[in-house]
Every structure is written in structure tokens, then in C-alpha cells.
Length: 354
Image (cartoon, rainbow, N blue to C red; front, side, top):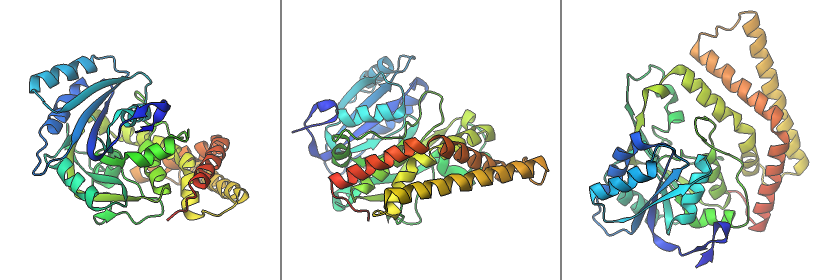
């Protein structure tokens, strides 16, 4: 027994999986997702529960889920909870707070898990105590025709392989997308019980900002756990037509790119764990100057028509550089404060990067 988020007493059971589905106005998506969870098959006994977090929905999501549970006669442990603060990160924190098992599987409301997802995942996790995060492989299901550019940029849509091979992701900044991802709850509790606040807000309503799942990966990696991927863990990821336009994708990439200065403190610590605060500032300014110069270079080439902005690669490069230049210009103080908070956290647990 221990105190958790908001000083709530938590009774955490060591072996098992809490499947957490965070949703906002998800009635049109949830039935297939929940049925894929209800239909999980096991050859060995595994303790598990299902928690749905209704994140400030206005479409009757909670009542829909309760009615579906009764219709399907699901006999497992099931709860439908409400998080009134909008934003995916708030919903995930609610799931973290309410879960009773050590492993949390975040299943998005448009993910359809293969029937052996939980069993395969738990088998990998139970054999490797070094794992802090385990990601799977999303397989896209298209509502309309697949765009010709999709395969090249599919990772942004949380589909496709996340590493060249299964196992530990060998990177200074290891990460996996949050869809279909297992997180080790005690590691996250260890961080959040100190009062530490994450910096990434993640999706909120129709906003395309993101990065909360990446930050959680980085926090667990900071505690010296490994980030793993397995292509044995498969799920279908529904791709609605509205998300398959080029206009949507460049807005998505702009949102992702704008989070770069907020995640920079993690990357800096992983690379230069003993560097001084002064050196951090220098490195941040170098990033800022680099992206500003690249942005102005793009503008000059566009003005003089050296760059063809109808070319998708050029257009995407411009959008990313512009988003980073603006964000590094505006978020220097925020990034600096978060770096100091991370150093305090690192010193508190006497951590050193891998």
C-alpha cells in the first residue's frame, strides 16, 4: 500500500495488466475497440482489468460504454470513469491513478487489439525485468483510399514497425508511440509522487499537439529502464478519411515539431548528463539560431522561387523548420525551467543516464 497521485491510497497488485482506454466523444469508434478487448484469449491465467476514461465527452460516451458492457455480457473487471479536465495527458494520468496492476496498456479508442495481445505482451514483460515501456505495431485500416505518401510518413500516425528488430530500442532517446503501449506503473508513480509535472500537454479536443507518450518514455528511461518494441504485438489502427489528407498531415507534423524545445531537456541529459547549466543554455541557443537561419533561408528561396512549394518534401521541411524556429524562440524559459526540474529529479534518485 502506498500514496499515489493526489495522495490517493493505492493498492497496487504486482502481476497483471490494467487496460486503459482514453476517449473523447468516442461513440463512433469504441464498439470495435472494446470488442477486441473483450475477445482477448489466454492459454495461461493473467489478472487484468479494463478502465475507460471518458475525457470530458459530450456525446454520451459513458452511458454508451455501460450499455455495451451489459450487451456483451463481459464478466471481467470493468470500470467507466470520467476525467473532466480535457486533454489526453489528463486522461492518462487518471488511468494511472485508478489502475490496480503494475502494467498499464494504453489502448486508443480507434485501436483493435489482436486476440493474443495481452498474453504475448505479458509474456515478454514477465521475462524481462529491465523493461519499462513495451510498444507494439499498429496496422493501418483505411476508411478511404490510402494516400501515396502514407507509407513514408506512417510512424506519425502510430502505425508500422518502431525498430529494426524486436527487443530493446538502441537509441540515446528511445521512444515508442503511445497507442497499444505498455507502461510500468511503479516507475511513473516514482516520478509523479515527487510532485514532478510533465511539460507536454498532448492532444486536447481538436488540437494536434502531441508528445506526451514520448515524454513518459523519456521519464521511464531516465529511471534506467529499457524501452522495448515487439512486432508480435499487433493491433489495427483505424484511419478515418479526415486524417488522410496532406493538409491534416502537415498540421500534425507542425504540432509534433513545436514540441521539440520542450523535449530537448531530456535529449540533452541523455547525451550530456554531467554538463553544466551554462552549457545547456549554449546548446539551446545553438538550436534556436540554427532553426532561425534555416527558416529565413527557406523564406528567401521561396521569395525568389528557388524552392517549389508544391513539392511535398520541400513543403513538409518548411513546415517543420518554421514550427521549430517559432517554438524555440518562444519556449526558451519554459524549456530551461523544465531542465532544472529534471536535474532535481535526477539528483533526487541519484540517477545517471544509460
